[in-house]
Length: 290
Ligand SMILES: [Zn+2]
Image 1 (cartoon, rainbow, N blue to C red):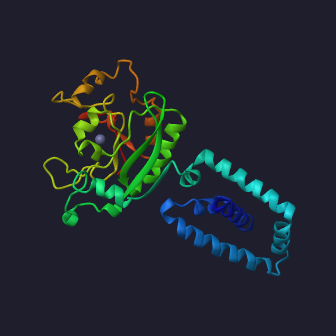
Image 2: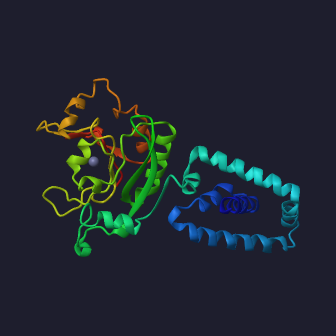
Image 3: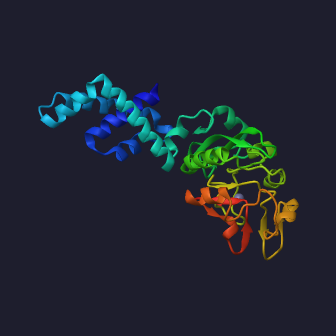
């Protein structure tokens, strides 16, 4: 229901303002602002109604056409076309209406899984608030070709990026072993990586500092980490250790992230940098957006 209402209002507004792109952008706001979007649309509808009473001949003609039942049908179809075209350039609108791919504030049930595990038990002096983080729900294709549910915690600043990227990966059938909260591995990064788990937020500091790492900020994600290990060039250390089998990136093996990989392309298109392009270490599993 909301979708249809929203389409009509968007299109009607675009007819009046001859600014379709602007109206769609305005309507395609993030999930967290849905309520305010509805309010905005209602006020637009009022403005449209007011305009129908305007004495300007051009406006009157436009509104007469808009009120014709046949034209209204056409407008609905036209607005769907606009939406379809928009999907090609941005999936934001569709993604927000999906019950499979979405983000939200962290549900209390999830907070209780995190506090004392991936998030400090005493939040008093925590360097990031749970209110700055989001819960991301996605589907993914596992290594057996089956659809699975995935859960991530990330900084709200990248939540829409992750929804869009994981939706595109799913639709392409891109295999991801598992996407579980790191709390299921006791917030132990080594254990999570060894289990080839894809994860994002984990409250931890940069070594030897009081600053949160990019994972601690919820702005970094590790994808299929066993097959895409982190290789420290100086020490030769490899994390996870079992990923040593996949440290030689000239070798041919599945689930390898390189610059031809779809995940690489999607993350970089969304403004993420790839750890595999770093010099001092090669973190092939890692994408981050500051
Ligand atoms: Zn990482």
